[in-house]
Image (cartoon, rainbow, N blue to C red; front, side):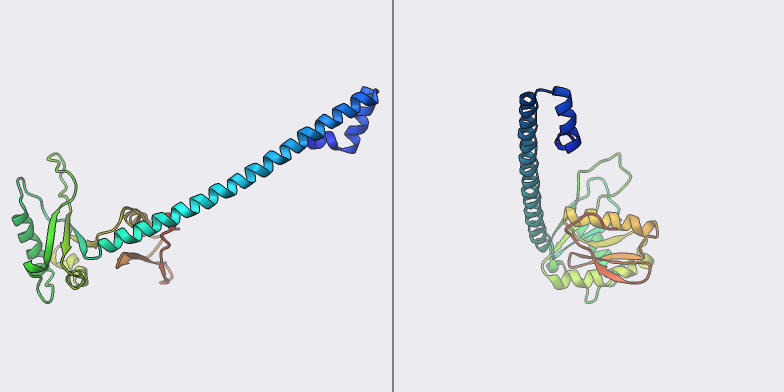
Length: 219
């Protein structure tokens, strides 16, 4: 609208309409003032948008740094799903089940020792109405212990169907992994896995790529 008022043809129409040149001049001056105000506001908004984007980028980088630190603190931890949960189960029973899975079924080599376990517990609140057993968070005393277990997890399909052993991931990485697993189920990608907290995916052409953690868009 303001741009239209400044057009030469519009100025002529104003001259014809108002006749009185003083009225026309005052009108045009008001239009120019408003036009300048709009230009200043537009510039200020553009600058504000750039500042907001810069702040968002900084926050995202800080969140990623925090995520890296949190993932590093989990470098000796794994999550085990599929081990049946019993009413009144204590840590001694959980430990026995984990040791049986690792040594008798997965055949971890050399066998996992109790001294390699820092601590373990079920994750989440117990719910008697839920038919699903809660996963077990297992923290080991060293990276080598974790590596030996993960090396044998490919045997689970045969030796312990329904059991899963995965790295303990941060919320951000777990969300990305969930989205990528959905893509795998839809046959949009061929495979997805983690190594030391880093997420990799293989496309339908067998090309492997490291997933960018700066975005939750995994497409």
